[in-house]
Length: 232
Image (cartoon, rainbow, N blue to C red; front, side, top):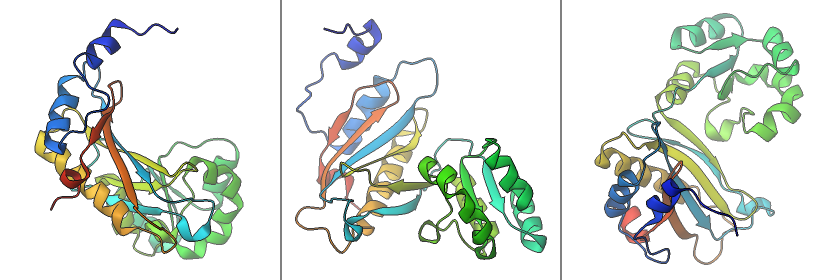
C-alpha cells in the first residue's frame, strides 16, 4: 500500500470523505488545509449527466470569472495588419501570421490561449493536430475566433476560463488562488458552475449537474452541496 506524506495526511485529518459541505464552509476548509509553500490553485470538478461521445451531449464554453483566475495568461493572436496592431495594443504576448505558424510547427508554444481573426483560420487550421490536443485551438464558440481582438485578449488576460467535458462526463478548471478572499472564491465558483449550467446540451437527459467538488492543488477534494453552489 502506498504511503502518503505527513502533509497530505494532515490535510485529510478530520475529514469525512462522504460528507457534503455548503460552499462557504468548503472554501474555508479548503483554504485552512492548503499548506503548500506556493499559492495553490483552487479547482472545481463537476460530474455531468452527459456522454460526450455523442455530438448533441458535448459541453464546451467559456466563463469570465468575476474576480479573475490569479494566473498570468500568455496570449497568442493570429492576425494581420490593423488587427495585429490592435492585438499588440490590447496586451497580446505574441502576434503573427505565417511566422507564428512556423514557430508553433517548430515546437515553440509559449502561450496559454490562442486567438485568431476569422480570415486567419485557413492558416490556423493547419495546426489542428498540434493545438487541438492541448486545448489551444481557436474556436468561435468560446470567443477565440473573433474580429473583436481587443475584447478577446482582455477576457483572456482578465480571467476567462475555457471548459470542455472529458470522456467520463467530467469538467474541471482552476477558478482562483487560495490567497483570494473567501467571498471572491465563492463568487468565482458560482460563476463557473452557472456557465456550465447554461452550456447544457440539447441531448442531455436526466440530472445534468450530478456532483460538484472543490480542492486546492495539493489538498483533498471536498464535495459541495448543489443548492449552495448554484445559489444566486
